[in-house]
Amino acid sequence: MAIALGIIAGLIVLLLVIVALRPAAFRVVRSGLVRAAPDTAFAIINDFGHWSTWSPYEAIDPAMTRTISTPSHGPGATYAWHGNAKAGAGTMTISESAPSSRIAMRLVFTRPFRADNQVRFEVQPEGEGCRVSWIMEGRHGFMGKAMSMICDMDRMIGRDFEQGLANLDTVAHAAADPS
Image: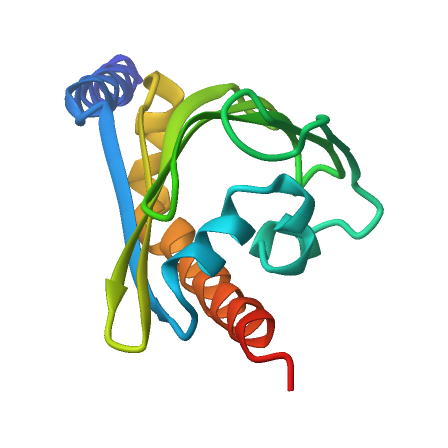
């Protein structure tokens, strides 16, 4: 019995060491072509008032409460949400807004877990439209490192980013060509 307990304790310690040694930093990047001019795509991303039309996270909880600052765009603009267990709660604040090219945000989750991440959108002309890159960077705490052993964060969040970029393409294309 003592040997079995020793083996179990050893495995637990080994697991804790493996989790502790995992990288803390993470980065998720997805890019997509948007069939609209850079200024059109930029204006939609840079204004939290438009996020309900394209963000993949809006559909998670239709009853989610949202609070959008006035003004709703540019540096200092904020978007706060409070939803069900899956949507969670948090705030986004635009920290940088370089017209038609780059938007940087601070993304703070307060529920279902705490996290403080940086998000960027980079918009570059490409052909008849533009390429939009959605980038999120942050650091995992111990629990985040443990979760990353089970869930592939790049794949999980990357799918959301891909859907959001496809939605953005649809919305921006319609705004650029209203006929």
